[in-house]
Image 1: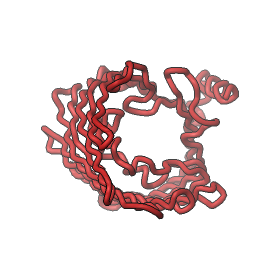
Image 2 (image 1 turned 60 degrees about the vertical axis):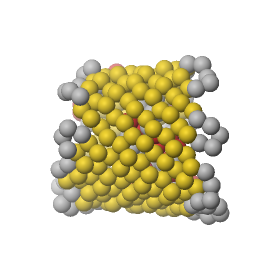
Image 3 (image 1 turned 90 degrees about the vertical axis):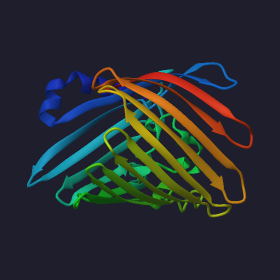
Image 4 (image 1 turned 90 degrees about the horizontal axis):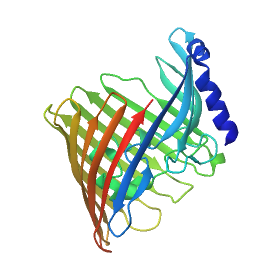
Length: 302
């Protein structure tokens, strides 16, 4: 861990070298004060986005071909500790060009690309989609081969496959359309060597200008047990150039089992292009009883 931090510190101090080699240091610092029903208030890292630190680079190989790499580690802002071993979030090298992009290493799956694209309330700790069983998919199984196609008239796709050596063989695909105010995404992931779960996700959004409508649908089919069906609806409402209100509801239903329902409401204020304040609440209804959560935090990107 110390070696990782030393390497990042050296990179941060080497601005001239960065410019010559097209290497950049980046990160997110996000922390929130969270109060759950029946519990005392506490600070939590990553209210909207996981706090992280990383560096990435690109080399122009000519003819439209580029070599890329990225190393990224999560950070718990409440303790300063790194999350996982080394660059546990992502660590890959790849090539990109007119054919699309190939990544090799610890890469997020194709399903992860579209999973939270239309989740209400900024896909945050306040998002009602926390009741979804499909949020439990493997996002970065390791030893992953990933390919993303270029866009053809707004339509693009991706596929990823984690090799058997990772002991978590995962096959994942997505297809999405992005054109003007319309977004539609479809994803599928088969986790053959873990639980045998199969995840399906369909989501979409339509930006009317005065409001952006959000919707999502998902299924989880385990190798053994009952299927879970899920949906969500939401809206992002701009209240000015810097203020956005987001609200939504979500439900998760196990065949022959209980329903879990949740609603959420949040407000985000952009103090600058890199710093955002946010606050809101979430309420969940389930067989074990109602729960609620309030959060207020700040997110800074660099």
